[in-house]
Amino acid sequence: MKKLRQYFSARSKRAGVVAALFFMGVGIVFWGGFNTAMEASNRLDFCIGCHEMESTVYREYRQSAHYSNASGVRAVCADCHVPKDWTHQVLRKVQASRELYAWAAGTIDTREKFDARRPQLAERVWQSMRASDSRECRNCHDFAAMKNAIQGRFAARAHDDASLDGRSCIDCHQGVAHELPNEPQLAAAQTELSRDEREYAEEINDTCAGCHGEFGEGSLDGEYPRLAGMDAQYLARQIDHFKSRARLNIPMLPYATERELPGEDIEIISAYLASIDLPTELPEIEVDNFNALERLKQSKLVINIARYPGKASAGAKFYTLECAGCHGSDGYGGTDGAAPQLAGQHSAYLKRQIDLFRHGERLHDDARDTQIFQAFDDRQIDNLLAWLSLADDHGKRH
Image 1 (cartoon, one colour):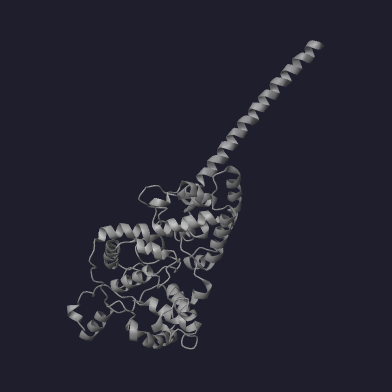
Image 2: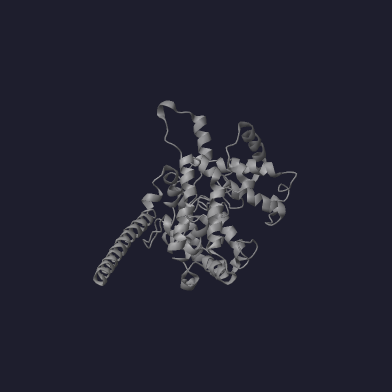
């Protein structure tokens, strides 16, 4: 009887070991499969597998430094939007179920629908990044590892401040890889003008034309800037600054008042000026259908920035280091309308504004920027202007 009990006991232990090994094997297979699926869902081709992502944010991302840069290091969607540690990564995948619902419901399946929801989508991402202190950004970027001495002066100043103030990356770097949503108060400035609104804008522009030209082309002597084709949000913001006297400009004093330019008029004239496309050359002549009057009208719209004396190749490097972070890699301004277009602007006007920044007579972004502009020598400024004078030859960005 004792031997029988020992036999069954040994057999039971062997069965327990076999069962444990079996379930361990199943667990390993399940765990491996789960992690493989997790990793697969982090791949770029998976993220852009649906039309909603491929036709919107992916196209924007491809124009960013995260997609293509001098170092050849590419950050894909998961590097910015999926945590590295396993626990937070699983939570993020659970949260992604909302995105699957949006895909199934077709709530963002067109560019128009996506842009309409962009403010809410963007704010949700920003809140998440603020809550984690921009954890995913810091996987690659960390204040302790930054050599501010070899950064551009403006970037170094901003990073020093952020490090001391305990600011998160997302506090400054919104719109790094994707377009920013339009500011609500300026949304109307981004819409197409109706026929009546365009006619009204042309009436308002009759006043502007005295200084800025009939088509907003500005003056060659640099006294008045080109406004045509500038970002509508930027234009509207500058007019508001003139009205509040945050930016003091004597010639604008009689016009930048609530009586002369109420809020609705600002939106309309900003949108009108932004819509003016000034080509850099005349179209080819149609010999069989030549119209002299039409040709004359076309010639009035052409604007060419004269080649500024300086070394354009050196200016390109200087621009990339010091200016591109805010004014865009191509000189056509940032995506949020905060920094203006520099390409296609009159060189004399740009030179005059730089001189104002240098002497502290116009505020750049921060009062300390006066010292930064003073640190740039005349040759660097000439090289910068030389590159910018050629930038518009590359064609307007639309």
